[in-house]
Image (cartoon, rainbow, N blue to C red; front, side, top):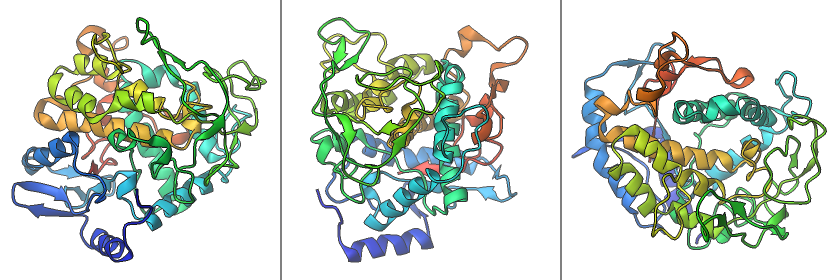
Length: 407
């Protein structure tokens, strides 16, 4: 895999991006960026290309105002792209912004282990873990959470791009040598050194009751985050030899290295065929939610982890493998960016109806007398409180603050 795919092509892409991020083409809108030439379109990429006419038709009926009063349109929507599709310079700018966030002072309240603004997001995930992961809130609240992180990178660290995502299919052949995890200066850091552990327990019958360990598990020693200090947690650790946090809730200061186990077996549960099936074969939102989590167990699937777990444990280690503190690995945001892309594609198959769909809504109702769509998502020191219903649409949600699409 090429680290850079040509100065001329990179310059051309940057020029086009700054001039016109989206263009109208016959058959619908499509972001005017090229994908990396080393990667042929997978079946999910092709489905996205086929979905643009539906998105265009839906947006033609809507007039969406952003927070500043301007219109949110396909032409001016931010475009979130896959890591490999960014130029080397764009990757470097993103990495620099993350490193910047790790140096800014914390704003978290009552979290002595939060050493930086980066840690603030980890602290939010830990203290709001039940709200963020309830069946009704999982999709919308994480969409808001990733957007808030992107906003911090842009507003507080001068990043000019948008949050990239990881296409699991591009990692599956050799994730340790991928552009994301090969350990070079424009990767998100390398694998961890070898440190034996038992793998990741899963709630499935044997032999699928564990994602087997790979060749890492120890400290990351290569790439931009080799000297990163992890402070919060652990709470739900999967690797051994970790010092206990001085607070039972994991919010005390517990400095240690970033650990990873870049895991191909986990990636095999998140291949394009799994993603395509999830989007196209589960039109009911609750069935989509259950399959996203790998439930019920699919007999005959050799890698039945479900897209959510499979994507998470590509990283593994500490804190990436810790259910509570997992945003402490900078690669977390790429995983949940991909999951947001998957939900967005599912919504855009039938946007007129699916933008109102919330998992379990028919069974769970509201909280007290509060309609479910008005349930509050509170990210504390990382973003203002918003209603769950306002977080459904990437093109005008969050009171107009959302205005983005994926390529």
